[in-house]
Length: 380
Image (tube, rainbow, N blue to C red; front, side, top):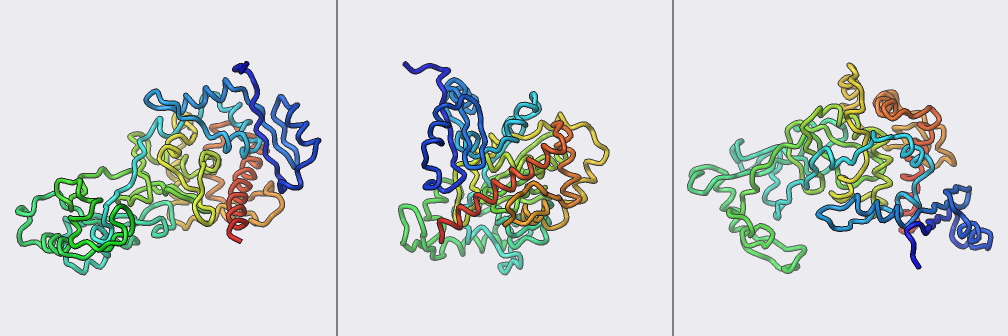
C-alpha cells in the first residue's frame, strides 16, 4: 500500500558513479530518514505528500505541473534549506508579483531587424530601438545607442503610408526571396515575406502589433554571466523575456540582480543548452523565488546602489564574487564592492548571517561551476 508519508529518497553521488558503487552508500540511502550531506554523497528523503503538494502549488488552471525535484532535492546545497526555514513568508515567486512575457517573435528577422545605419532611409516613426541579443549590452542598464538594430514597426494600412520609404521597404519585402531554415517549408525558397507561414496569421503581415515597453528584460539563457536589464525604452527579441511590473522598478531591479536570485535561478531549471548554458522557460522564470519587494525596508540609498553598478560591464559570476573558477573551495568569496552593497540589501531583508552568506555564495558558485564543467565533460 502506498502511503502519503512514504519517503522518496533523492540521492546524488558527488564522485564519479563507478567510485560510489559500494554497499555502505546504498545502505545509508536506504536507512536515511533525514537530509544528509557527506563529502561523496547527498541524500534527501521527502514524503510523497510534500512532493504532491509542491506540484499542485506550481500549477495553473487546475492542472498538475510538478516541481523541480532534481534541482531542489538533488542539486541544492544545505544553505537552500536553511533559507527556506528562515524566510517565513518573505519569499514569493516572481510571476506572482510581475508579468513575464516572451520577447517579440517577428517570423522574419531579416526583414524586421533594420541595421542601425538605416540604409533604406525608413522614416523614424517606423523604427523602434530593440535589443536583439544579450551580447549587445554588457551592463545592467540598456543604452539604446549601443544596440545594433532598429525594429520595423508599422501599424498602418498601405494606403495610409503612401509616398513613404516605409511602404517602399514593405514592397521590397513582398518581392524578396527567402530561404526557409525550419518548419514545414524547410529547405525551400519562397518569394515574398508575406508568403512565409510564420507571418501569415496577421491581418497585415508586416504589423507586429502594439507592444508595451517592459520595465525590465531578462535573457532566456545564461552562461556564467548573470544580469537582468533595467530597460531604457527598448523592445526585446524572442531570445529575451519581458518583465512588466507596476510598483517600484528600482527595488525589483536590485532584487533580480542579486546573487540570491541567481542562486534560485540555478536551482529552478531543468535544461541546459550547448556549452552549459542555463536555458530558462517563461514558466521557470515565473516560478523562481525572490525576496518580496515589500520586505525590503525603504533604504534611501537603494537608487545609489543600483546606480553604482548599472553602468559597468557585468563580468563572470566568478569575477563578480572574487574567486578562481578552478578553486577547490568557493567559501572564500570576496565580492566586488558594488556587488556586495547590492547583495547586502537582500541578505539583510532575509536575515542571513555572515556565515550563511558565505555559504550561499559558495553554493551559487558550485552550482554554476558544476553546470559548466559537466558541459565540458560531455563535449570532450
